[in-house]
Amino acid sequence: MSSIPSPGDEIYVDTSLYLSHGVDDVRGGRATVVRVETETLGGRPVPFVAVAEHPGSLYNWEHLAEKQTELAARFGEARARPDPDMRPQFNDDMMTEQEREATYEQIPPRAGSAPASARATAPLVLVALVAIIVFALDRWTKSIVLQSFLPGESRLVVPRLLWWTYVQNTHGAFGLFGNSPLMLIVLALLVLGVFSYAFRDQILVRHRGPADRQTQLVRVAFGMIVGGALGNIVDRFQHQWVVDFIDFKPIWGNVFNVADASITVGVALLVMASLRREKPA
Image (cartoon, rainbow, N blue to C red; front, top):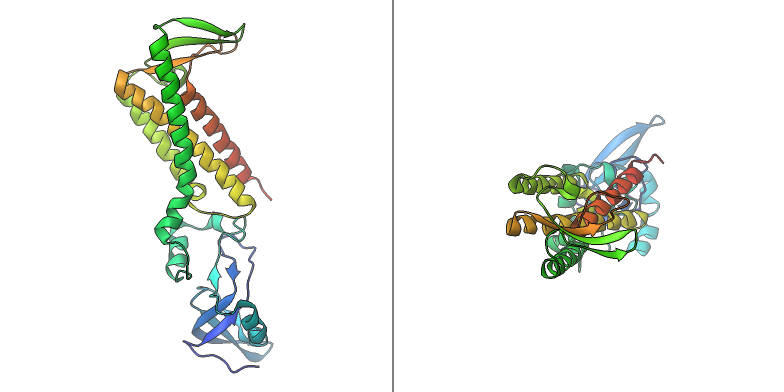
């Protein structure tokens, strides 16, 4: 067995996978020893080492010493680091923001990696893109209605199914939630705040593998809600009412618009994502 390292020495640790919630998987590599402890196992002392790159864990040096040559050849100069993205279904969902931030504060950025601000901003690009598309489509369709229809005018689009009917809606989505513009704007902002907080990990944290597909779905859904909410908020600031025109008379009694439809689909997708996240393994 190699001699027991001292604090400050460089050793290699292997990649480790954990099944416990709240414990990060670890990618192997070079690590700096910060503490050496001795525990009694089977009636004899066994050295354990703690490393800066994996705070909170102890490595059995007897097992690790035998693998140093192999690990050095495998990892070279790469540094060990916790990686909640390796298998987020086991780890990251149960970490608090404080635990995650404390973990990453102890890990120096890898050479050539993007700045922390860029890594935090990247997941929001999809949210912003979807929100812009929904907002632009909502504004464009409403502008056509304002230019081409008189209030209350209705035109048949699909026989016995769909009409374009211009309605100046002073209420909330689908005619609900009162008729005070200020109250409805505040309510819309509160709903956005609740959804952004409830799904903050999936909106802001980058994942890989199967979890990435679910986080992408959440970002698309949240972008639809943001774009739709902003479209209706602009209407209330501009007109004190919202332009509605999509009218399924035989099957739905309320006239709505692209923003309402986007918000409804977005909420449904978030509910689906939430049910999948909470489904027991």
